[in-house]
Image (cartoon, rainbow, N blue to C red; front, side, top):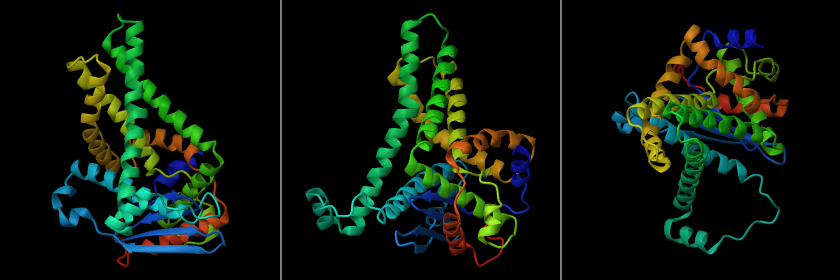
Length: 326
C-alpha cells in the first residue's frame, strides 16, 4: 500500500483541480470553472457548471502569499457549504415538502430568494466554524486547564503538550465516528471517486470507469491532509507563543488561539502548496500522516460514483492544456 501511494504521489503531472464529495455527488473546481454533479433519485445526472470568478482578480492583494491562504480557506468553506446544500435538495428527509417558516418567508420577501440563500449559507459557514473552534480549540484548552487545576505544579510545557494531544485525539475521534455513519460513508465513497478520477487524469489516462477504478483512493493533496497540518502547525506555533507569554487562564488562551488562527491557516496553505508540488523526502514525510488519516475519510466507490467523478472533472478541464498545472 505504501509503495503504491508513493508511486502515485510522483505522477508526472500535478493538477490544481480539486474537489469535494457531496450528498450523492461531487463538486470539482478547475482554473476557470466550477461544476457540481449529483446523481438524482431517478438515476440520472444533474450537472451544474459555472464560470469561476476569483476574488484575487478583483483585489490582487488577496492573492499575496499568506494572505491568499486565509482568503482561499474562507472561500472554500462558503463554496463547499453552498454545494452541499444544493446536493441535499435532491434528497429531502421526507417526501412531503416542508412549509417555509415565517422567518424564511420574511427573508425571501425582504432579500429575494438568491440573497436569502446567501444569508443561510453564510450563517451555516459561521455556525460550522464556531463549532470547529469550540471542538478543536476551546474544548482542549478547557481540558488542559482542568489538568492544571488538579495538578497545579506541572510545568507549562506539559499543559501545552496535553492541549495539543487532546486536539489531535478529538480530531481523529471525530473523523472515525463520522466514518461509522452510513450516510457519511457514502459521502466518503464519493470522496474516493473524486481522488481516483483526479489520479487518472494526472496520469494522462482516458477517463473511463475502468481506468479510474484502478487508481489509488488516497490522494496526497487531499483537504483532510490540510486540516491535519493546520492542527499540527497550530500546536507548534501556540507552544512557541505560550513559552514566551505564559498564559494560564483558559479563556485568555482561547483568545490567543483564535488570534493565531489566521496566521496558522495562511502558513499551512503555503506549506501545502509547496508540498503538493514537490516529491522529496521532507514532502513525503509531511504528507504521510494525512495519507494515513484518509483510511477513515476515503472509501472505495462503486461504478455509479465514478461516473459522477468523471463527469464533474470533464466539466472543469481547461481549454488551454497545462493551465491547471500545480
